[in-house]
Image 1 (cartoon, rainbow, N blue to C red):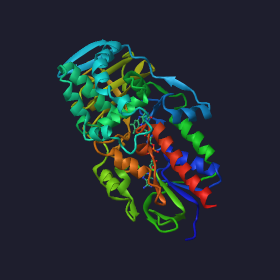
Image 2: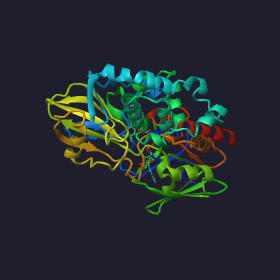
Image 3: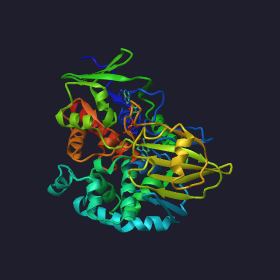
Image 4: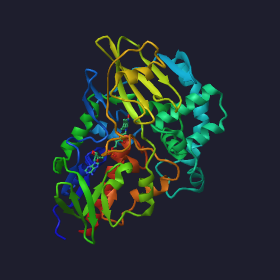
Length: 436
Ligand SMILES: Cc1cc2nc3c(=O)[nH]c(=O)nc-3n(C[C@H](O)[C@H](O)[C@H](O)COP(=O)(O)OP(=O)(O)OC[C@H]3O[C@@H](n4cnc5c(N)ncnc54)[C@H](O)[C@@H]3O)c2cc1C
C-alpha cells in the first residue's frame, strides 16, 4: 500500500496533539484529522453569555499530575487558584444546612478516608496495576453506591458522600466503578483531601487554550486538518486507510484513534477492535452529566455547595466576581435533566442552597449530547478496567487507542490524555526505529 503519511491521528484534543507533537519531533510525518472547527476537544475556553471567557470543559490541573505538570513546566505556564470557599451549604433531604466550608469538608473526612482506605494497599504503585491482581479483580464489580451503603452513615453523612461521588464521576454512583476511585486516591498518595484539591483548585492562568496552543505550535510539522470527520478505518497488512465524511481517504502506516469511549463505535473499524472493548464501548462509561456556569446577581462570597446524587445539581462553587455579580460553576450527574439554556431552571436548583439567588445569565456546553464526545470526563463503570487497559496496550494492530479514557494514571483528566498520547507515540517511534 502506498502511504500518504506515516501516522494518522484521529482527534485534536490533548491526547491527539501530544501524540502529533511527539511524532513530528522525531521527524515522523503526521496528519491530524479533527472533526470540530477548533482544537482542544473536551477543553474549551470561550467567550460566554456571562460576560467573560470561561472554561466549558476541563479546567483544573495540579502538580501531582506528572504529565500535565511537565507540560506546564516546559511551556513556562502560570497557575491561578480558584477562590478559597468560606461558606458551605449542604442539603440533607429537603433541609438546607449552612456552616463554614471547612466544617462541610470536615464532615466528609471520616467517610471519605474510610471509603478510600485500601487505595495504597491495593495500588502500591498506581501506574503498575495490569494485569489486575487478585485483590483488584475482586473489587472490579463493586460500585461506589455499594461502598457508600456499607458504611451505614446517618442521613447527613450519606447525602454528602453520595453527592461527592456523583460529582467525581459526573454520573450515578450506582454505576461508578470503585477501583477508579481507588486509583485517583492512590495517585494522590492515599490522601483524599489532596485528591480533591487536584480535582478543583488550580487552573491555567491563560486557560486550557494556552496549553493546547503551545502543544499545537510544537506540532507545527503535522498537517492538522479541522472539519475532518473520520467515518471509517480499514486496516490491512501494511497499514490503515482512514476515510472521512467528505469522501477523502488518508493512507498511513499507523492510526492513533483518540475518540472518547462513549463514541468509539461512531466510526466503523474493520476488522473490528475485538469483543471486550467493543462491549465496553457499547455499554459506555459513567460520566453523562454536565457542567454549567451561572451569573448570580450580587456578591455571594466564596462558597461551596453540595447535595446528594438524586439532585439535578450535586455541586456548585463560586469562581469569579464580575461587576458586582458572582460567577458560579455547578455540576449535575444527568445531562438533559434541566434546561441548561434557561436561567430560571438553573436558578431554581441554585436556590435550594442560596434561596435568594437571582440568575441573570447561564452558559454551558452539553458534552454528553455532543456526538463528538458523548461523555464528560472519562470515568469507568465496574468491570471495564481490564478491557480498557488491554485495548490501550494492544500493539498487535496498526490502529492504536489513546485518550484520557485509556490513561494508566490520571484517567479522566487532562493529565491522562497527555500521558496516553505520549505513550502511543513512543510505542510507534520504537516500532519505526526497529523497522529501519
Ligand atoms: C465538563 C468537563 C469538565 C472537566 N474538568 C476537568 C478538569 O477540571 N481537569 C481535568 O484534568 N480534566 C477535566 N475534564 C476532562 C478532560 O477535559 C478530558 O479528559 C480531556 O480533555 C480529554 O482529552 P482527549 O484528547 O482524551 O479527548 P477529547 O478532548 O475528547 O479529544 C478527542 C477529539 O476527537 C474528536 N473527534 C471525535 N470524533 C471524531 C471523528 N469521527 N473524526 C475526527 N475527530 C473526531 C473530538 O472532536 C475531539 O476533539 C473535564 C471534561 C469535561 C467535559
